[in-house]
Structure formats: C-alpha cells, structure tokens
Length: 118
Image 1 (spheres, rainbow, N blue to C red):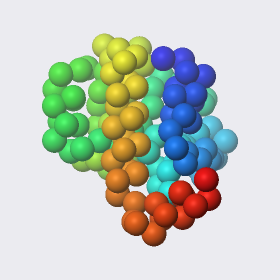
Image 2 (cartoon, helix red, strand yellow; image 1 turned 180 degrees about the vertical axis):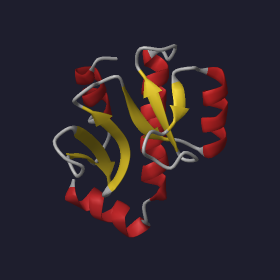
Image 3 (tube, one colour; image 1 turned 90 degrees about the vertical axis):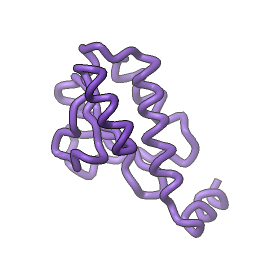
Image 4 (cartoon, helix red, strand yellow; image 1 turned 30 degrees about the horizontal axis):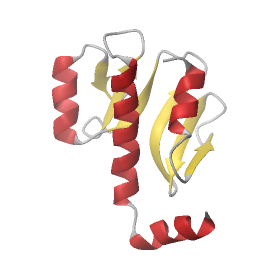
C-alpha cells in the first residue's frame, strides 16, 4: 500500500483529522482527538495501528510483517511493515479495526459533539 492510498483510506472514515503533533515527519490520524494511526513520512516502510491485545498477539504470530508497535505501547499497538507478508486488504482491515477501537472508546459526549459538528 503506497502512502497516498494509506492516507486516502485512513482519511475516508467519519470525523477523521490529520495532524503532526510529533513533528513534520510523522503524520497522525485521529478521531475525537485520539490517535488511531501513525505513519512516518521520512521513510515510509510501514505504519502503527491500535489493536485489540489478543488479536495483536495472533497477528504477530501469523505474520512476520506485524510487530509490536514501534515507540508505542506494545500491548495495544502494532507496527505493520508494508514490504513484508501483509496484504493490502489486511492492512485496510487493520486500519479499520484501529479506527473502530478508538471510535468505540470515545465518550458519548465526544461522539455527540462530532455528530453535531458534521
């Protein structure tokens, strides 16, 4: 998955914001102010996504291209290597999974604010 496809896909979900809180090299995708995807623009070899802890372990055992999140909480985040054995449909599934986990964790008040803002 090239960087443009990744950005288009991650940006296609409702209420997504893009930001550079860690400097110009790291693009962050958020929903409700919470991060669900990080990608380095300097050396695009992969990206970090949030993941259910049990599912994360299964993925890491199954795919060499899925590792504990680089510079992230290793229990809840995975780093996906785009040059390894992870298919584009699986990458998309993992991005969606991350978005849904984060969106579901938002408070009712935040979800209502997002909905009313459009």
